Image (cartoon, rainbow, N blue to C red; front, top):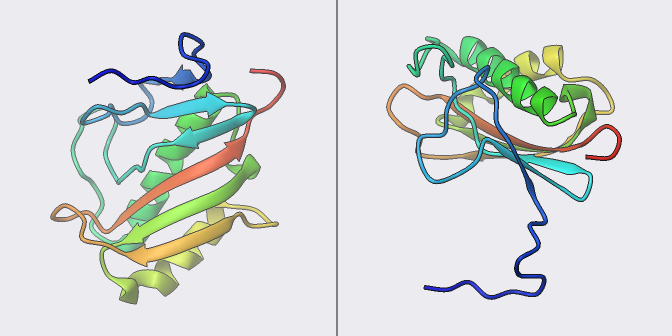
Length: 139
């Protein structure tokens, strides 16, 4: 199948790749920078060195996911403080209070807008998050 769109031949996105965050498990990028924004893929609590799911509870897993996302954001010229939109998938919405408390320790005010939903995640995965953030300077 051929994709045809306006501006074909002009790549409007710059791929972001870092070994400090989990390697994509499929046909997607860790993040793309487009028009001064970085869009990350959804990330779960995967150890970048081993590729293994880690963390026994929502607090541990949320902290690791945010650290992984921060690595991707930094590789793309941004950081957690520049996040404007977060989408969060929780395996169990009963974990929301602990998730939110952990999230607030690593994110700063004004907090990004956020959508949080209950989702069926792979076994053992309690949280997945993706971000949209502003990129520093011209990238």
